[in-house]
Image 1 (cartoon, rainbow, N blue to C red):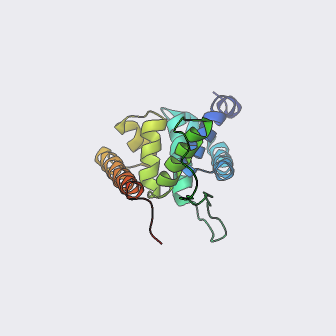
Image 2 (image 1 turned 180 degrees about the vertical axis):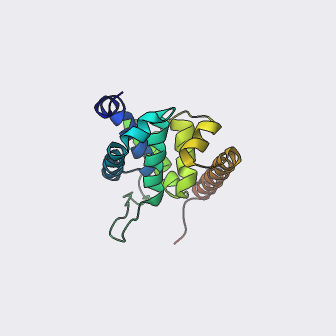
Image 3 (image 1 turned 45 degrees about the horizontal axis):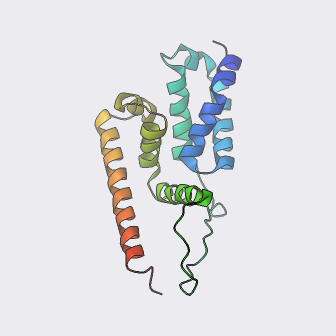
Length: 173
């Protein structure tokens, strides 16, 4: 397989993976571009790997884990304050509910350390097993299991705290 064939076949899946890692399309595009330049420079080594896609995902994951963000780059999530004086609306779900839930998931994932977030994305979005995740993250299988366990425990605790806050009538100011 040539570099051009690899790019034609795998560029879009790699971009989707980078979006899941970073939560930001523009940052994901930058990460993929930077990674693909490195892949082209090291193509002989990449092509010689048992599974070139795993090798490239490892490079992309490392680029994400090492990404240096300046103070000028912040993800801002805008949400309206809850208006308690407004009349109660019917609880019929609409198309916006899915967007709100997706935003909440992005917000929760953004609070995780990068390695934990990468492990979750590799497991639940990419569908990789522990050994494949360990190869991408360049760590032991036990470390993968520990990262995923800690990440899920953190997410459960934050979801529980958010649910408790909502049940008590929101935040007190």
